[in-house]
Amino acid sequence: MDFSKLIENNRLLVQVKPNSKKTEVIGFDYTSKMLIVAVKAPAEDNKANIELVKFLSRQLKKQVRIKKGLTNKRKTLEIQ
Image 1 (tube, rainbow, N blue to C red):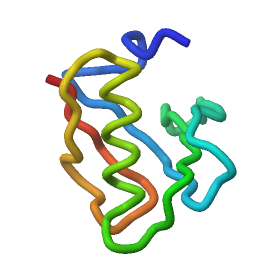
Image 2 (image 1 turned 90 degrees about the horizontal axis):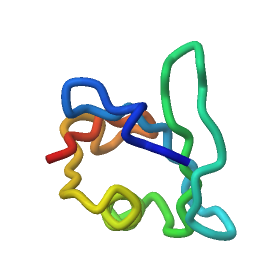
Image 3 (image 1 turned 120 degrees about the horizontal axis):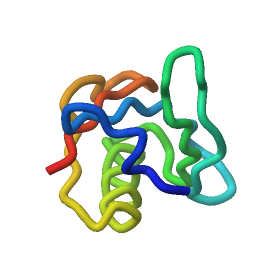
Image 4 (image 1 turned 135 degrees about the vertical axis):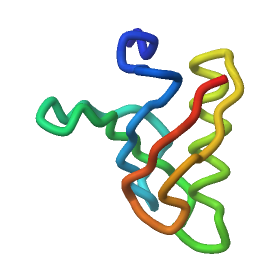
């Protein structure tokens, strides 16, 4: 999947599903323009956030950081 088309103003909206069997992109919500990502790590001690950032950084080959939503399943990521 070409993520570059989903990035607007260096921002990417993501909904995270922690405690999944594996880390992968599982879909896209067209109404909210949000990428849905399953993450193997649990949503405790920032583990799911760290895994999400590492996964998307590898996929995009760019630096990724969470701009908004550190304690929420819906996040705004900044792509540099």
